[in-house]
Image (cartoon, rainbow, N blue to C red; front, side, top):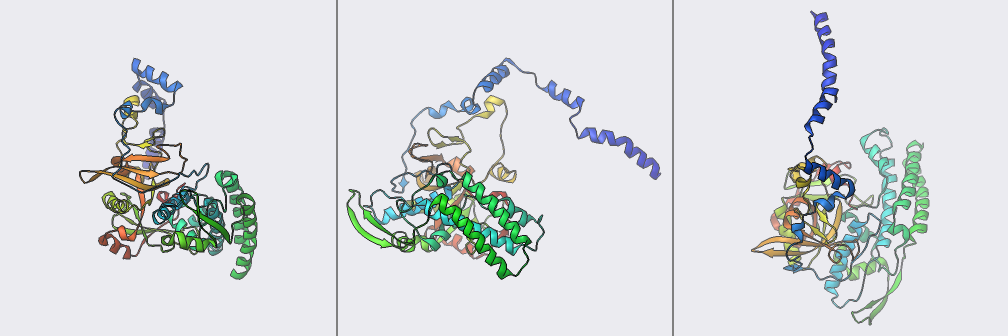
Length: 459
């Protein structure tokens, strides 16, 4: 009986394998399923010579008035440009601090913080975080998931709001003229490649090194000298003290003082040193009203991981509106590449119509897109405006960091429908958060792994 069953299984094996393959019969069926019409031929001819986005752009979107009025808008002046770098998180964070500085100093003239100053320390701190974590995990096998992820991405130029907060608290701030942008700051790819390769080399050395923890840490500090040298040559050397003149709108000097970076931050952005913020996420793939913490999602070894409260989008919008009513900008993270009309700086679910061109639809909702890796938070921008009609938001505006010529005067305008579908992160001051949500932050966070695809650094 056993022999007969085994023989029958062998006979069925070719069928089982064929059922899993594209056989000649399957291919014939596929070929037969496509019988192009004259319209299909016209579409194919057009797609063959044209960017598909030009063909699917909804021309109805251009009809009518492009409304740029907002009920509540944070006062702003000046647009930044991250150039060919993944520093959106840093530009966004500093743009928010700059808006707050303008609110407390309304007569301030042209002013920008130095992104390069904090970026230097960001890269140095991330290097230390990687090397020290390699030491901490050196007893785990090389193919352990955590070790593997460490070596896959030792360092990057992306990040989150917690990185901005921790770096400002530790290193302070300086004006842009005190530490200018460099080519490597604006174009991070080459420097990034050099740092990644050196850190992988150093990490492997630490894993294979024999000695005590103290000896390994001493060797790490020697390695960091090389990292510091690379950063100093590519980004410049951060100042420890500087003299700066505050000027008003008429370019008249108000005061001239000497500061350390920490003193400057304390004087002009005192809120940045309080950590009085709550971070929200709208991730419908996970349980709402739970606090989550992403392991190793930080910028400094002793710093804070991304800890957030997952809420329905309506709660996130309630907090955002309260903040904007008080002229307070917020850090946000969204999937900016989806449905973006770059020329006008307009984000709408109706911008493109692939269905009419290709004869297909895309029915997945936000939860399904997250579960299938089709969407996630990819870019940070400062939320600065909301338009409300009949008590409900109809559109929003963010200050971007792609230069003043991109989008609508350096901004992006999004419909409320787009916000609901593709906005994920929001960081707001605690005072704008209802007590019912604040109380939920007392929960013990659910720990999420560092490789969770939803929580890759924004760039």
